[in-house]
Length: 311
Image 1 (spheres, one colour):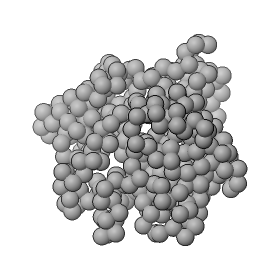
Image 2: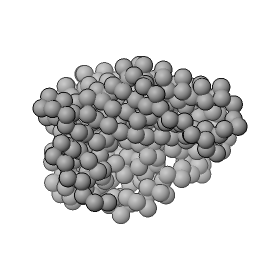
Image 3: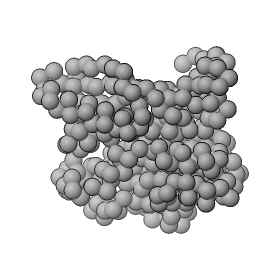
Image 4: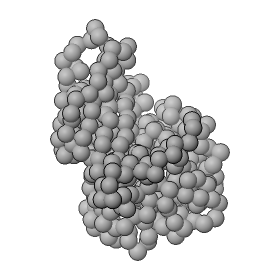
């Protein structure tokens, strides 16, 4: 792709960030993003909630306030339209919770169902939080557990039922609004939301664009209930091999168990924020967030562009 030259494009594709940011005036910039998912749960209303929360999250990850959205839905023309209605109702419910107005959208005939949103938010041009500004000595906080990909695969292959992943469903339908508010209060240097590339992939991107090293502490990583058990029993999240193929060459494993190393590459859906901030600001973040958050690692000057997993 040719390099885009526009002085008002404050965040574009060059940093692989969560959303683009375009300056409108000295006081206002637009944060814009688009995302869509295939169903990962049978309940269409819950799927709509998850897909909407996942799409809106990219605006939160930049420190923005989501305001406006357009639905994007692929749906088989011969399928029950009431199911599509439930998907859209779930998205509407989550958008309303986020204070986002849905202005319309686009529906197209497709063999497989997919749903998501194009979302626009507001931000001050000088208050953008990108994934490229981590500084050596910063701590990394994670606001939701990981392991969703393994749980979803177990659900798809009928190893578990929907009730067994209630904790993960609650996490996926939870907006990252409180985490975004807390990171702004705490003066975070950088942030990203943990989604399809897994924790490892998103941390590699942060290390590469910020030209820093990232150290993850395996003993501090929060995992969803049963993710370890199911992975060890042979449940294989396809995202693990995909993400290891893309990012594994930039991740060093320092004698950490193979199952933990594999699971950090698992695909997450509507995951939490990885918030990077000075160590002195961690108590401010925790108090403002008001929910459990794990300190999972730190930023280093050594090994720029690489992630190191240690015990």
